Image (cartoon, rainbow over all chains, first blue to last red; front, top):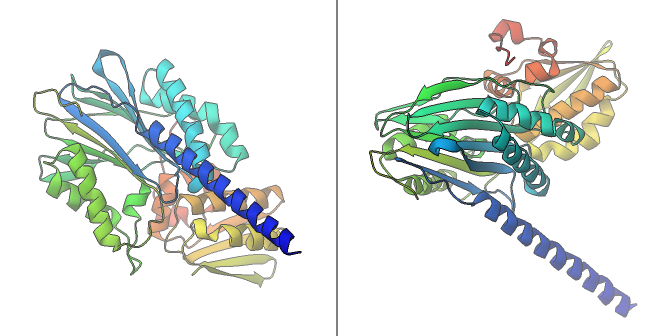
Length: 267
Length: 116
């Protein structure tokens, strides 16, 4: 009997260690995919950063180099968190990479992505919100499309913050055969564009208060002159101070695009 | 702390939801609320005490409503706060589930433009 108990405990321990090892490997894979090669940009910086709430997460960002020095940027949030969300994040990444190669603009990319993964997402009762934009550093043009995601915040001249002109679109997996519209805005030298997921504005402190968009605007405005990587650290530090070490409830992801002042600013 | 209460008023079942609708509600939603409502024809979800929803909560809500509709129930959602309705609108939930499900929508909110 004693022997059987030991064997049973040993089996549990083995299963636990196997599971732990596999999750750590999955985390490593996800981190590598998220922290892939950053695009070489003329006169601008682009950077992304993600912290999962669990070992692995469902948030996603990516950069896809286009012709003429342009880059397609995407940020997304898969419903839920942890392993299930991470699996769907990989599905979303594959759909983006395939679509980015053959589509003309961000609207067409989202249309193609929804077409590719709609049935899978419906079968799994899930969905993904994404915001996608084409940045042209030569002209300052940013063309964007949205599938149910928060609009990025633009900081202009260290004095003004506003969200990009609103553009609605159904989240991926919401409805079939969606056609996503595009809008265009001209960015200026010194502008900082901050893409984010809801884990930032919905981070809570021990009093149940959320960080909210107003605190994000304030943080960005006060620190817009910093580099993209410095700004990432400042946002995370500000969130950590706000939540006073309370466990992170949702994945946190940001992408920062900074329009430079004449020199190549590749990170 | 998430709680719910089902009140029967003649043929209508009113489900009063209290608390945040997020991933922590998954088990209650799937194991308790869904089976409890399966045989009911006319169901109203009262959202007056729901201060916050996140994407996981919306996913749970969509799944619940789709399952109830497939089982033949008629479902409505009432008394949604402006903060929660902002998130619903951002994800275009009225377009996905049908605007008729949100009985307060016309009174409190401007129509959301179509993407097509």
